[in-house]
Length: 206
Ligand SMILES: [Zn+2]
Image (cartoon, rainbow, N blue to C red; front, side):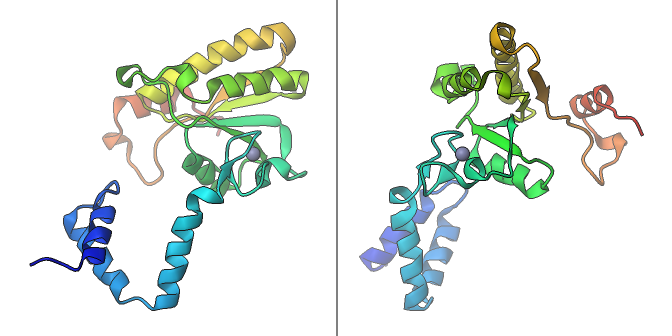
């Protein structure tokens, strides 16, 4: 049976999204068919505004409606720290911990040689320019890239680049990496060697 064209189109669009198969796409489309008109309008308006009203902060490249994002323009944030993350979603997770009060830099990716992604394909040049401009005002760069091969490669590259830069104009600059350890609620018995090794290296005073 052929579905009405708009419904079929919606199913196809949902199916094109990551992690959504044909069945789920159908479920979502039929669900929306039964949702009140006003809610549908809000949904479609959000879709329409997604690109047109969203831009990247010109300081940290976080997503924003203004030229400079809320974090960068907040006078209570500590300007002496920059936390480098791979994606905006990572920034949101760090924010949720409420443990960090500095600024960010979003790379939009990671160095990934197997997929031909080098330092210049992500926002590393922008980070370096920012660090150069900050000079001695900057005290710490926190490398919060993912604890996997690409994230480690990216962190190592940045560490070398930043150290080189720091030697020239900011010798006191601290370069730190997030400590990774055992997940809460996990038992040591089931931890993989990488995680356990890292947890040992980064053990804290108790
Ligand atoms: Zn910003």
